[in-house]
Image 1 (tube, rainbow, N blue to C red):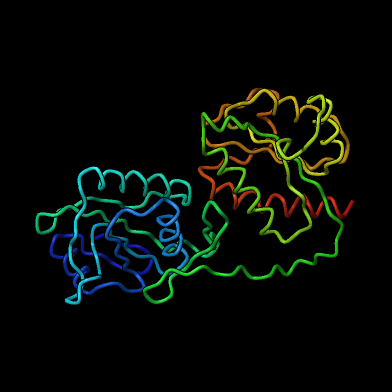
Image 2 (tube, rainbow, N blue to C red):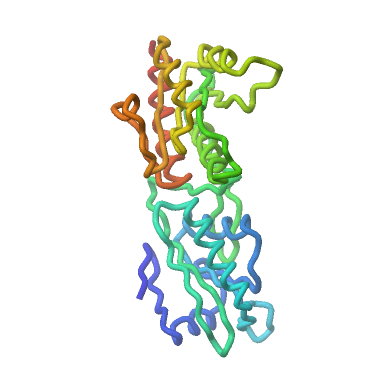
Length: 289
């Protein structure tokens, strides 16, 4: 038996057959084929933001007689497992239970998604969307308006990080997590990187100019990029800068920065939670000065 926050699942062959026989519900979803990653992400996030649930691939509701096993090819099943594990690693701080099994001679894949604790909600997709279960449907949820006043002055937050995205695509997810965290604060913070600064300029001088114009500096040391050490070193030599250091777990920091407080994160979701809190604190200090 695998227990999530709300549901116990009997994962024996008979137990899986019984779950399928009962059809789709708030905690059960069927997909005949393996959908695109954006759709898988939608369902994983939707279950996590609700009561949790179980997602099946290779099972269909289309028959008038009820659910039936359509099955997956070996390559489809392998792709489903790989995609689920890849997406779950980006969304959650924990591993989800994802398995292949054979019913009536046909291969299916299922994944069990826990309902996340309240302090981690809402889980957002890579595009910043929030989903939840409503009956048998997964719907997009509107984010509640922030209670924080928007009348305060705007503050620029400069992000120094590696953008070697061709080597590590997750870097894009990390930056998007920072943007989502910034938006979730409801504060008047303009978060940007040098990639968003247009024009023809000498890069080193322009970076220093942008740091001079920013009150908050986020330095992400994932991949130990040399440019981040340079940018942080310059920022620490300036006055009235609120600096947030972060890095993916496993990153080895050089001696000149390792003694400063650093937010170590497991994945984009973990980073989003920690950066949101850090930005709130940094903004508060900025407006009080």
